[in-house]
Length: 449
Image (cartoon, rainbow, N blue to C red; front, top):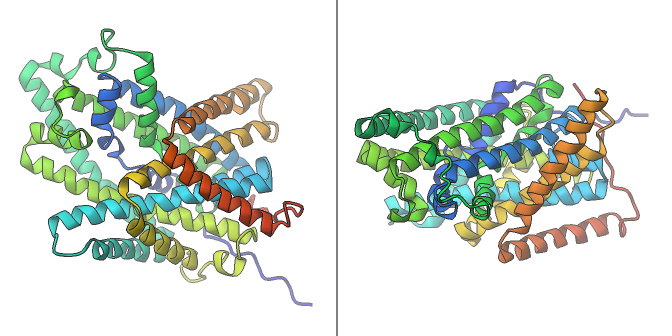
């Protein structure tokens, strides 16, 4: 009798810093740039406070991800954790919702890059730029995760140079105008005359978009050395580092341009701030930086989606011959990378940037809520002191769940309708696959390392 074929496995080659680079590039070091003007107006000048409040809340959810990664160090992220921690059927729906999120991440970045290049060279059709962007991202991912990690570090280096230049020039600008009093002022964090809890809450919901993508770190758990220690640490650190950098960026921007009612264009307000402190070259540099950031985010988003499909394929929830395949030479889920690239390109040609942005949070926060519930359900499975288990295994994920629920309920109605249609399609597929949910979906134990 022939031995069963070995389950396709990925290579454990990544370090904690590879994960941190991956997570930060996926989120983008300039993530708050796009929301700066809107968040400042909604919060009545308290965008920094909104960023910090969102950071605290997202770290709660990141902690739940880290605890689940310690129990199940396998590729798949929220899909894996909800499947093992709650129920295989719920896990499939979580993975289905999460796949929408990871599909939208590369698609929304392809849209932005293509639109930007089209403005620079309008004689070339948008579809050509979209195809070129999607093709470039796909080719980089096909070269393997080690190549992806190195590309991430290069992209992060370029983004960091421009962000540091902005910070230095902003401090110089403020000091030249008002001395150290101009650089350090509590009013840009908390102004009692303008502060309103309701306004801060609305801005915090928007500011949470800054952190979308941190969970992508856990999709690489099966390719990490010592995942039980590395993944929880990297997940929390990605949120913390992103929050601190974002708060500093927004703080300096508010100090440079304190009157949020005078922005020339609220969506691109940060560009004007950059132009004020650094002149036209910094204005242009920030624009180029956004293109680079979108390429990096699209690259890492596609890698995460491909590995999510790999986990679902190996569990035979999706056809394993296609989605469970790993290229033995590169250690890459080749067919998944190509499949995600094709879907992202098609999406970029069919939907607008605005609608893609609205859909992004639908799948993400469903997944966040599922992981928080799974962390509560599995709190006894880690060998920990009782007091630590109650606080970190019950209270922390409960708070994370409540925050994510509030954000999810505040999504626009069109996003809920489109996202609901996606979930309905997943329910129909799952019902057919399991004969009306009478058959348990198969799962594979990848609790290694």
